[in-house]
Length: 467
Image (cartoon, rainbow, N blue to C red):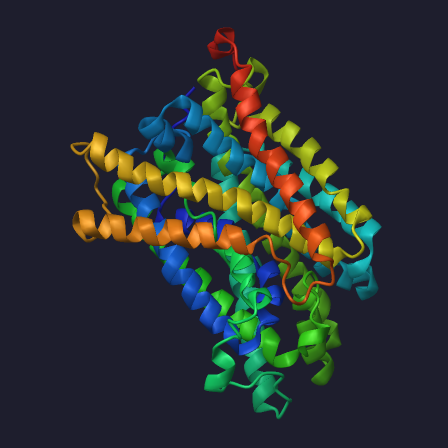
């Protein structure tokens, strides 16, 4: 069976990247910071998105192997650290999925009753049903999944994002009251209060994921040329949507009324009610909800296929090597679905949906930023140990440029991890309780890869037959 079919072009790969990174669910949280979101996004793009994009483009085109970041780290630091890295990426996704789908539940609630957006039982039910539906989509293979990502991204992310921006303009032009002041004083947040800058941790997570598409490098028609183009095209689209979309919400909704999960639909409803267009709410739901589901679907394929590479190398039991006729790791996805369903129970026990949303977001960010630190170290190591390996794309600026962007990225990641242990000003939760919950979660998820690798057996390396 040929598992390396060339089915992805620049557009398809760019749309997968947009689906991986760009989620409208993050806009309400960004909008809470008003005009200063421009400052935060500029910082995130310069300190994080640009270094990550440059480094992942070099690694993916120099080592376009099955497994993505797992293969890159394995080349540099050996199988153990390759496994730990991809395992951390996979584990952070288990935490990320419930937050992404909680926002989806809030959108779907507007088809039934907007008050359901804060109903824990409803939120949990939507998370489980939609997530397992996304897994079934991925069972169909990368060609089908890529098509779903392309269509879903255009109709469910880019189009609703554009409508949201246009509504913001319409609100201002029609004489609606702007909830923010576009003055120079509003651009710079109060940096003396650490609770105002912890937001960067969440912003970094919303920009994370552009390297995940590296697992599809062998399925790209011309990876050396198409992969960098797709990365930078996607990065531009994501930045524009985040910036204009969050400003639109901040302009229309008062800061203290923005829901982290339902803020998008709050905005649509407010404007539509103003213009007597309430009938358009279901149309927006039909567009927006699938876009959020597509993002989850894209995240299921990438890390799962990366983890499959570790299973084939013997770091996981043969059970996890199982693939279906479409070359998708069905057993890994199934186990993933079970764990996500269990983690989603957090929405039942936290005081509010917003508290659950932010704590899980922060936990995922800390785990993922650790992965990025390893990735930055990987590109340095490979430049030193494998200088003659052909690199169709290299981080610009020679050795100085490489070190500049790597150090910039590492400092940004370490700073964001430290900030992650402080709750944002908008969250009503005790500091000790917040830090304790986050620390316990980080410790548990960090030690899991080491335990699994310590108990691996030589017999695991033998692959099972694919049916």
